[in-house]
Image (cartoon, rainbow, N blue to C red):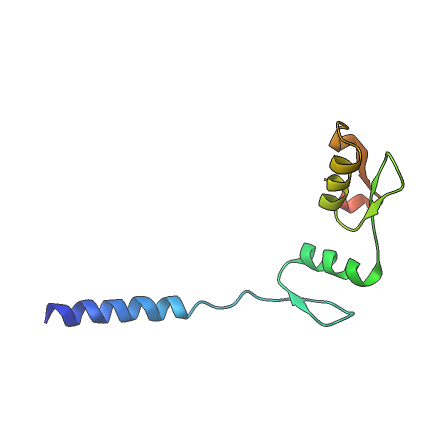
Length: 96
């Protein structure tokens, strides 16, 4: 009898886990229709279609669609240079 009670609680616990709702995907790409739940991820994705590269290296003519790629470039191509001063962005809303 004690086992039946444990089994019922276990079933309730597992069914509650399975009822998790998927994340809402409220941002849709106007180019390919893919949906995402985070606005910033959608902005990055859209750049794959537009070719926009707002981040740039102040030491050469390299441009990138993402800040992390511009920073990686500085690390590899300009070793010993300070990161914060050498990666910039054309878009004011992306400066942070």
